[in-house]
Length: 385
Ligand code: SF4
Ligand code: SF4
Image (tube, rainbow, N blue to C red; front, top):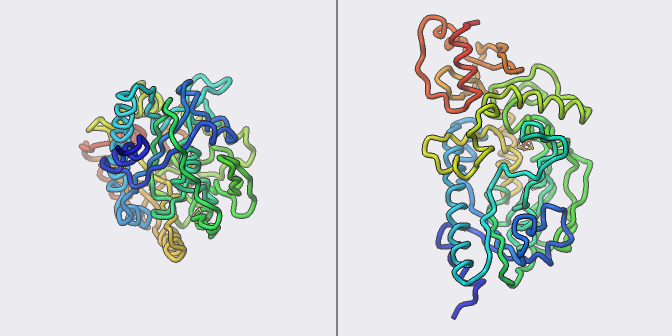
């Protein structure tokens, strides 16, 4: 009969996992606090780590601003797959008498002193780090970006983890000579808010491996860029898929940056709604009406396993133009006539001039997939400019 490890791997593979590995609490014990599985499962002895790859063609169309929604939909579908894989592994382990927990995929952070809720957080330490587990389990290694890089798919993967009281045999981490990151620094060059330093580094140790990765700006910097409060690169020539602009550079001082992030989150209609992907990510992922709004992740999407592709993708990004918000709720590439107009949400928004002209004369019907977009569109239709 196949071993428990083999059966778990084969089960995960049959449900769509592209890569699967195992590690143990003991192997993870030299890592940062979020590498400790006992935070979520006190009896945890082992972790099953698995990855599902994103659709490369769709991701490339996303970064070159050919299409926006398919990448959002691809991410949602993969999140559902990851939850299903985790549920099946948990059921299998429990049927054998072990404790098991399917770790939430996103938006579950450890409490922070002084932060009443996610809008006041600044560190965003996960309850359990899928990346550290994947590194320890031999699924990938940490790249310069800090993302998990695999040899097969580069950084274009989404990760899941199941914690269990079963004592599983650990897989070996990927050795240094096979490290998938060659420090090309394309990830640094495609971050619109310059989160990832090009030269300065820091170190993180997990599973006996010390990774040298980029020194980063405070996590609120990525939160501002990845949520889309600021999408424009410093050059002004390209952006991620966000049509929102702060209209001034991000503060360099951490306290000022954190305060700005908190202020923007407090003004964000998504954060004001009680029932969001921040209150229950899993429920959102399986809600057929929920739109998986994603505007960035460029540091990940640029990162192919092949250097020449990374260089080509970076070029696509910096030549992709800037994003604008149509008043039907869709995002597109701004043309030279687009206007930047203020909103009541602490942000300016880029809108095609023709859309604004029509907004004054007719009431538009629009899907309005994202609360901030929806409220901004309502404001523009109401107020004109
Ligand atoms: S883009 Fe280059 S430097 Fe950045 S993580 Fe990928 S391989 Fe490493
Ligand atoms: S997700 Fe976007 S904002 Fe965040 S580090 Fe990556 S490129 Fe920068």
